[in-house]
Length: 186
Image (cartoon, rainbow, N blue to C red; front, top):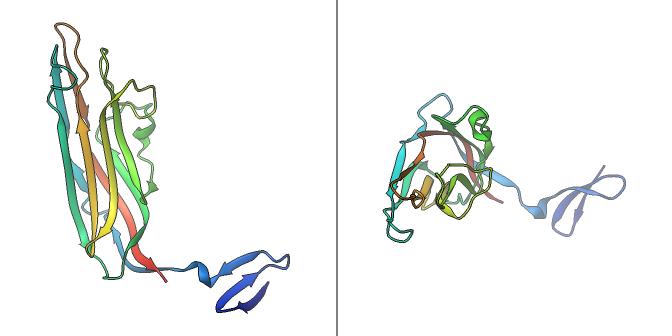
């Protein structure tokens, strides 16, 4: 490998000329670390909505809420985050893909739950056929106003029930664990 300046940039190249490091691409500078693993997690309670027959898809009651939790203060220059998030669900069928509570990349927005709107029983299900989304729950971490913020946005509506029926859609309780690095690119 060779180390050389290319204009104002420092570059490390392999023998075949492939650039392995280029200082012009920017380095991530970590200003804070946030982790609640083994500590206090973000807890979101069970949320349910019920729809009875003939309530109409446009007129039935809807849960429409945003929950924000300020995790902590950040450096004034911080504008980016890297890390991992793990929602731990209180109840999912054992064969459900989310029942293992996998760690996921904390950058961007995560679809937490979707559910259908049709004339059959609604079933929260992120991995199967959905006939019109009636429930959408998303979570994200963001750096804003010198703070690390966790945000959950949820819109829920149980499907339009059949004659004589009542349908209920439920988002199970969830605890959110995280390991986050906050900083900026040099």
